[in-house]
Length: 152
Image 1 (spheres, one colour):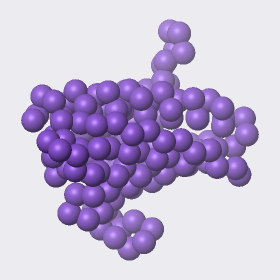
Image 2 (cartoon, one colour; image 1 turned 135 degrees about the vertical axis):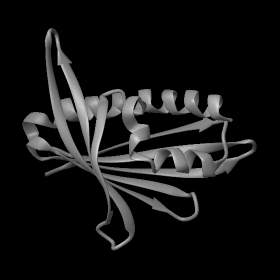
Image 3 (cartoon, rainbow, N blue to C red; image 1 turned 90 degrees about the vertical axis):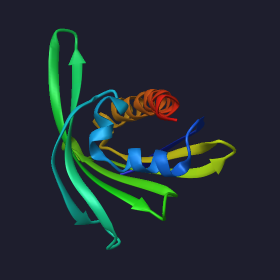
Image 4 (cartoon, rainbow, N blue to C red; image 1 turned 180 degrees about the vertical axis):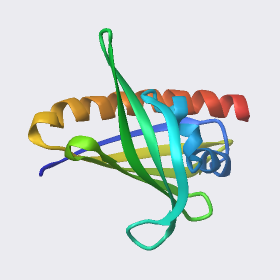
């Protein structure tokens, strides 16, 4: 299955430690990712490399006109370093897999945030999944910047 890659870099007005704390809390993703409306079954686990991580189910809500569809996705969230990187491994129904790596670098009074994504999806879903992933990434960046401005 081919991999689609995408990346975005933006700046937030908050120190890396604050951004890291926010991004390693699964409940922060409600509204941070515009499709996520609920988080459940949060528990400690190990990631694929044996590092301490948090596993949970995030519920994404899609709307197609008057029809809504809740899509439960399994997420493993790993914080790396004191506050340097956050890795999300996402498994969604339909064979969609997403790996997001968020790098945090101190930048004056704020943080430079670079989010890199690798999407694997079956051919019938690939275009839709990539479009959604990129749109969510842009909205998540704007919402994270907004939240950090309020927190800082």
